[in-house]
Image 1 (cartoon, one colour):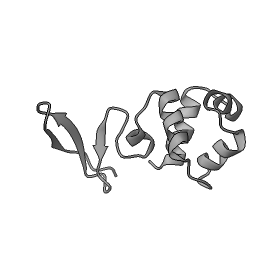
Image 2 (tube, helix red, strand yellow):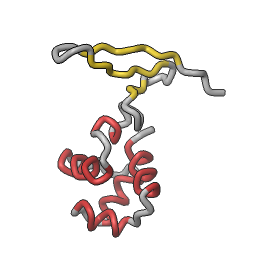
Image 3 (cartoon, one colour):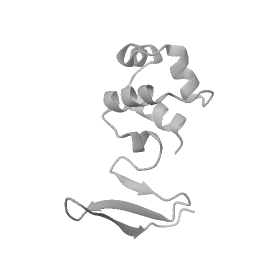
Length: 101
């Protein structure tokens, strides 16, 4: 999913109007509409406000991971989960995904 679709789904899942989200994060209704329609990209401070409000990661908003923290490969054939090994290292587990018809 791309950012506009992710934002729209988050807003609708929380039953929020543009106006309600606008008041909650401090950005105008029109800019939220531009973001959802893909006409403008949010700034980093706006992304941080959205991530904090919806309690999601910036990677989730960017479409890099799903809601469970699994990294999505661009061709959607594999999902990578970042797994901590210890305090100094991280490795990726490659998990094949079923092909969609």
